[in-house]
Length: 70
Image (cartoon, rainbow, N blue to C red; front, side, top):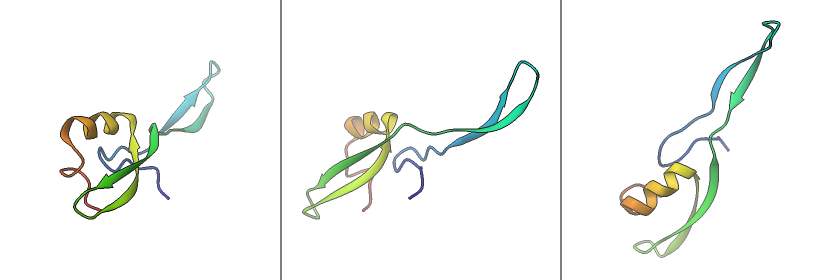
């Protein structure tokens, strides 16, 4: 399963680690993803989504119905 936030669309970033001797190695910065179970009242079922920490705050603020189409 991919490492993409359902709400915000955050993806892993890529770049280089640069040493003092200017050696470069590839690196990835992964988003802070959490698994969250959400009860959808209209469909009467639980849905598990991968959401970033910022996405969780957004879900609490704007609600679940507006942002997740499961």
